[in-house]
Image (cartoon, rainbow, N blue to C red; front, side, top):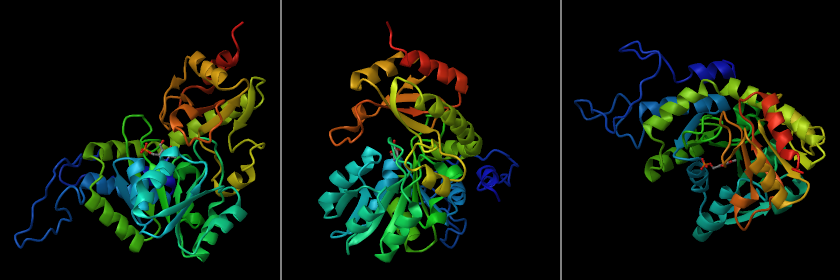
Length: 376
Ligand code: PLP
């Protein structure tokens, strides 16, 4: 099956008792035992599994080309699940520039358990090679990264990590499996904030980790999911499964819009620099062409001339873009990213990030045009 077909069909069979075409939502927290005490129907208690979650996980695993997926209450819960695989004395290599919450987890939640980390420039393979240690067990990649749209070479980094018996987890939230499938490039795990494109409508928080095979990693993640209990609710699973049916067309149209906005912004005199992997001027453009499947995503950032105050003023002048954090929804958002990232932020103060939605690209460009035009 091709990805569009999987998004509609996997884990979404017609319900056999009633013929319901849309899947029911299973709210039950508990499931009946057989007369002999067994659970031959596969469910016992909803923290361990329920049909709404299982159907969702089957679909997410298929979209990423993996064997199994475990879903969580948020993207942050999903990254923490991956970090839970580590033991005291082990070491993680993570990008200097990525979603700030992932770095905060390593610094503030994981390090106190005796797990070491190094932040490295993941765009520089020599730096990655030099930073790997004998005790490195996990290399974390986020590509394209939030919010600078940095590209990391998944295949090359996976080869380096595997030489040292380290595993690789790639945060694929920005690209989505429509444009990038890290497991095909050698990653062992793929992580998502499904709050973003998977959900797509800014109305649920969720996360997922997909394992390439059904071995030890998948079992450890499943065990952690059941035992830590940070699971998504049946309603969130149901909503998410429904949203996945339209993932491909949403992401493609949003990406078309983003490409048009990026080319408009990249030549605008009020803008110092535009970060979008689809632009030939982007330092990761050749790599993006190689490792992404023909599209570069719907996230972009730009640095305005004039500094922080000018960036904030431009965001304030937009009328169609909503000033809000998060990304991947149908509505376009604009955000002064450094303001939300806290003291460790490496994001330029004059940077604005756009999550490009499904509005008409000409309307979005007209809105940016008027916002970039400094009032007399
Ligand atoms: N990874 C990336 C790339 C993100 O952008 C985010 C959130 O913005 C997360 C992970 C964390 O996800 P959540 O907010 O669902 O916990």
